[in-house]
Length: 472
Image (tube, rainbow, N blue to C red; front, side):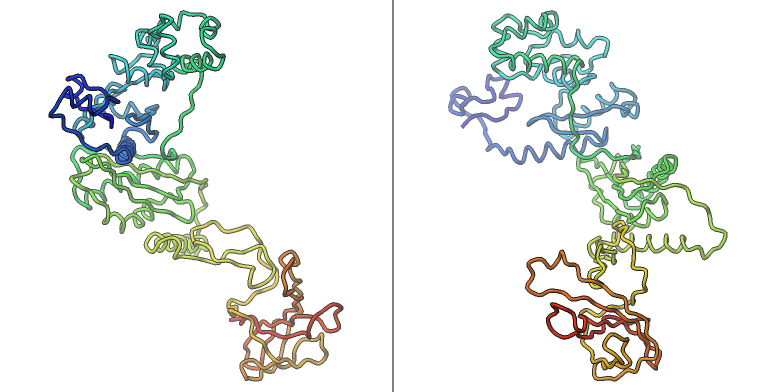
């Protein structure tokens, strides 16, 4: 068993990470130890990366004990880079963490300053001077490469900057090792890009509000939400965008982050509609000992151009907007999978021409059939008995559910061929259908069809009649 982590007192008494526990107890007999929990540490580090979203939406984890923060465009919210660093270190200290900040123009330089530097901030003009006295380990080299450079007398970064590149590369056993060292050096100096990915996708639009006093009540949080919604919707309007999903992040005093999210079926930027969607969920948010910073992010946005105002109150688009808002409220209250609608499907077979999808999903571009369809289809077409003048003519009378119905008007046929590509290898083959729209003496209209053709070559069985739907 070996030491995984130390507190400051243990380090001052000569213990080191990786040291055998028996050797550590020989130096300090009354040493207090606890079982390491690497999974819990990783979970806590990820939670800390989420908490750092109060400073920038771009955060990620670095190894077992580090965090990346890209504060580009965010420092002015805290009075500059020095103010942001001071605020970050101060709040981490209140949460019980000791932090070594490093701020530079490149990730490599920031990592080197954080792990090995004396000053937390490197000015762009003096970045070379800030890196020069640091050990070569600050370049994130593998242990073998760092040991070889030290044996060659290159113990700090400064001599590497002055050494010709070809000379430095020849000092390694293979070109790959030399190229790896040059890559790390170029990344730290900004000569080569070092792409990094954030822990979460960067939101398209963000509204942030730092509170003078922690908010402890749902009423106070609602006022904060209103200010954020107004600010975010104004930015969306200026960009001619609409939001499909929003997330409210509440950064609590105890270091926890509470979140609630809403989704919309269509792009929107109406703060009243968004507030109504947030209203019920806002009561469930855990404010803890108070919220000191609130963030509202638009995670998914789409174009939403301005629209001409209607002259009549009974505008159809206004009615559609009301339906969309109703769907949004139901989906956010009951859950998106529980609110469904019919979407056109690429099939001419009536029972396969539509499918159920979440109501908030975009509609498909598949065009509806040119002929009218009944509003109600039976779960399964029901067989009927038909009397027709000739086999291929519309029915004159049919019996459905033991009731005879005499046909006064008929329209058809509308022929629908079977989808042969679905029948390859199937034991039962579908047959052609001829659909008719008929009306009986009582004015009731039906949608029925004949399956199969009379005297058709290769046809198995006689044609059969079915009732498939009812109009009105």
